[in-house]
Length: 194
Image (cartoon, rainbow, N blue to C red; front, side, top):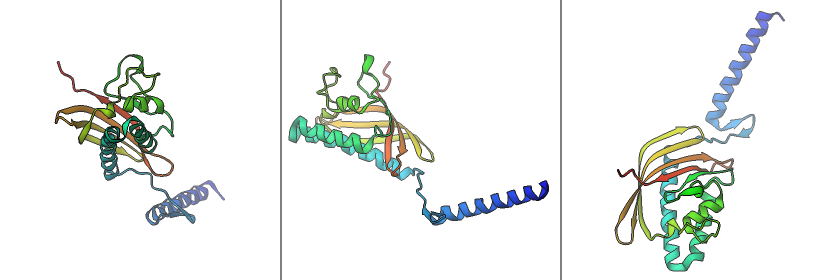
């Protein structure tokens, strides 16, 4: 086979694979195997943001009705279901942290922030235990690229007295190998007040 025919054959073969891939992507099968679509949708991102707020309120309510042990158990379940600590370090900068413990790349650090009670994080008093009763979010923008989504905007938390705390929030979501959306970036701060 001469070089010209080899190039033509190679191009034809590439065209066949590209066509097959396009058809298989639509049908959900490739060479007899199911395809997992890891692309994130805007609905999935919004559902994850809503679930995060509901979980924060649930931890707070569990603390009120069942005490610290109940709140801690709920917080642990939330971390295991919503965050990507099972995938590696999570880029977590909580709202009310200072000094050497600002960044919480481990599950233990995140748990301490949400419920306190960890001697290794003595300044943590439990952000989720502050009596939150209502949660809203407003995205300034959402960027989705395949299996990664980033949001930036505000979260509004209302406590039992009706006081609203506004927090600047950036989240990064990534799908794990089972197709579950996980928080891999969580940055919170209070708005700048000159």
